[in-house]
Image (cartoon, rainbow, N blue to C red; front, side):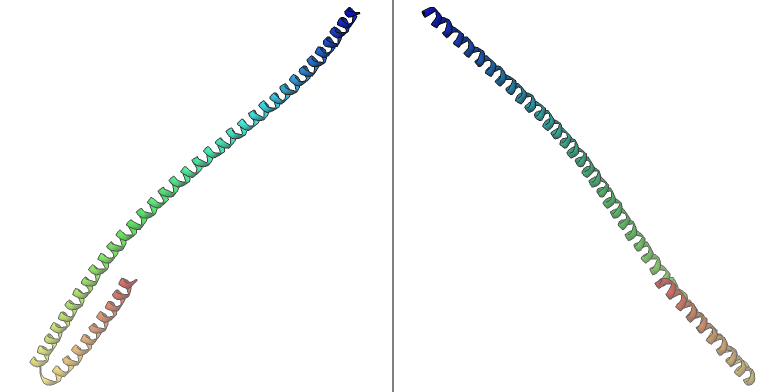
Length: 163
């Protein structure tokens, strides 16, 4: 009877071992699937991180490129402002030179008018009375005409210099 019990116990132990091995095999397959899923997820996350790094690198390059273009534009702007200041200075110097020339011309014209007046006065003084009055009138007309022409030219020059 003991042999039957031992044999039965052996059968139970064998059945339990088979059940245990089946459970263990099932648990192993479940763990293997979880490991595969985890590895696939890890790979997907790695690829996602890699893609994000590439995007960040692209953005960094774009930012650097933009900063470089901005610096170049600022440098060109500074260069243009310096050139404008230089041209303004040249224009101011030219304007001052032109104004000095205009004043010299006006002074010369005034001196010339004075000399003409003196000439007419001497002619008037050296001529008989009727002729002297006629010469004086003509001299005054010529002198007034010259004064008007000089004043018109001066006004036109001042307007041109102001523009």
